[in-house]
Length: 100
Image (tube, rainbow, N blue to C red; front, side, top):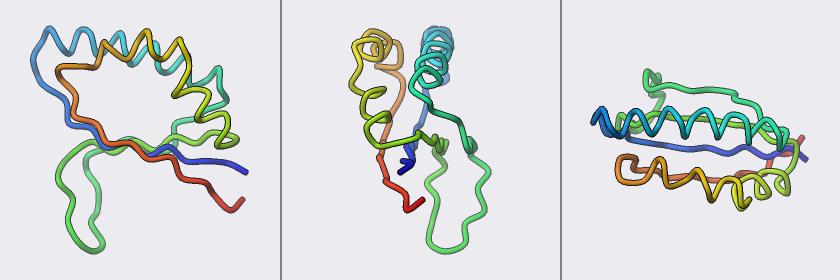
């Protein structure tokens, strides 16, 4: 059963941080693909249907299974690149199993 990884992030606009974050993005994309993940949506320009949106970027990734999502997130490779986003990214992340 597939799993969605839903992330909300607010990024600093500090140039030094953004340079590190570009390295983080490149590493995450490679690692995500290696675990079967695919980007399904990225954006800030959301259409709010009810309630509020706090303006943070929303990222939706899909993995073939919850196990593969967790293998990505808890991998040694991710642990090595995660510090590149620290100090400039406020992140909330949720793993959501699907019904298909």
